Image 1 (cartoon, one colour):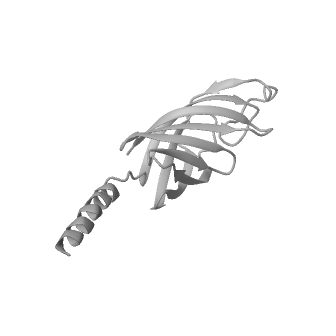
Image 2: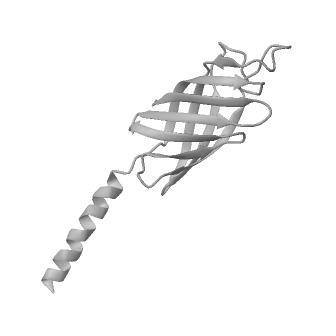
Length: 146
């Protein structure tokens, strides 16, 4: 009987250890996008007459993850920089889920989808795609936890 209790206790310890090592994206993250954009939108306006031109933009974003539960999380993302014409008042809801490795996963917002990878507890790599008529966007950036 003591052997069975000892065995059960030993199998419980790794589970506790794993639970304590789960990553957390809770908090505020900042980073600058490297984007290829065609057409225009809230985060990617353009000059009149150049709506069809492909352009490259670097916009500073802030991602705030406000809640996590298991492998899922929710938050918001918005632009923070006045350096480029960008709607910095607009924030979009982000819904996300970790993959099985608990370091990578997917997110969606109102307009597109993102893949992510936690390089370490303070560095997040994100790639974003938006395939619509206004705009099309391909973007990757690194974010740092504040």
